[in-house]
Length: 189
Image (tube, rainbow, N blue to C red; front, side, top):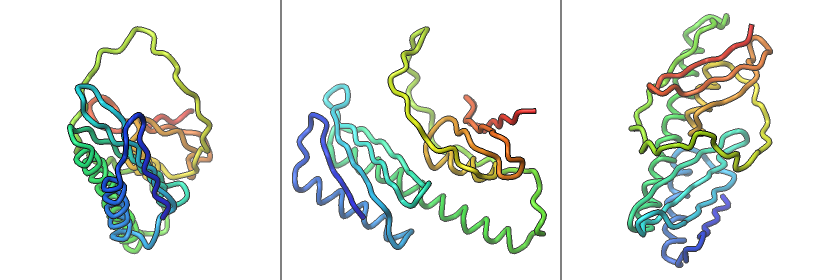
């Protein structure tokens, strides 16, 4: 696996880079035979703290993101690596559960989906301006998935919304995380 460790206005020493390489390699080997790449970025956070962002490409169409913040760079990395580890553990469990369900159910797929519980506490609520500024636009591929797979991708990508093409209907849908932590599903008429 290609692991890149970089600092945004922060020096990353040899010990921090070795720690990041060893920990991410151990996490991947626990769940998969290999992964594509990981990018670890350290930056300064408010009050002299360090922020660590990890973006891991495990396989095609599976991107995991984890963020941690602490007064020590090693601790901030460990926090974000723990989030990646948790996401991979959930992903493997869901794959296992899906294979077990497929073995016990009929070949006909029902139009139902599972809402996965949100176990993370809500992050600090900062006051937002009246008209938010568009910082960046990105182009992404719209995945074709069932609703339950889209909910799983929403959780794995650690985002608030996911636009996808429904494999059952062929129409574009969206799943999103509501303010109360439940999942919303938008399907056009």
